[in-house]
Image 1 (cartoon, rainbow, N blue to C red):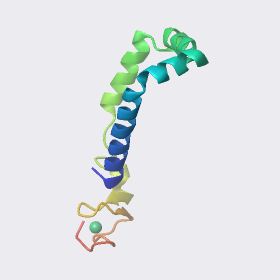
Image 2 (cartoon, protein in one colour):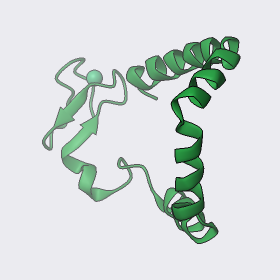
Image 3 (cartoon, rainbow, N blue to C red):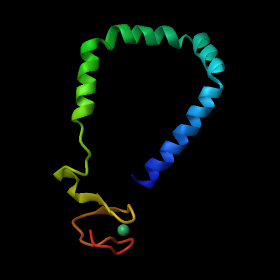
Image 4 (cartoon, rainbow, N blue to C red):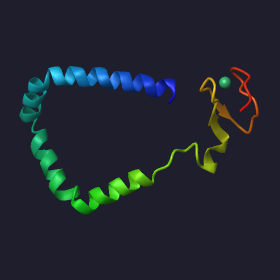
Amino acid sequence: MTLTIRKIIISAIVAMIFMAANIVVIANWLADTGVEQKASYVKEQFLTGTALTIIFALLILLVSPRNGKTARFSRTCPVCDERLSGNVKYCSECGSRI
Ligand SMILES: [Zn+2]
């Protein structure tokens, strides 16, 4: 887990708490703007059971890019999470062996 992912998770938790505290205001705003009708139209037209099954199957089949051979030239240091380019043996930031 990189530092960026941790920051995103903390920001998302703070945003969720703020949204939960103002849920009535947000619901009224969504009803006023007509988002609810557009969302129900999209749900009925495009998010059928087959489409949801395909989306979830693709999410399950997605693998981490670190496991594939295509990620060979964009690795991260296991010690300091520095992004490394090229086929290097040592981290340029902390000097540890990759
Ligand atoms: Zn490093």
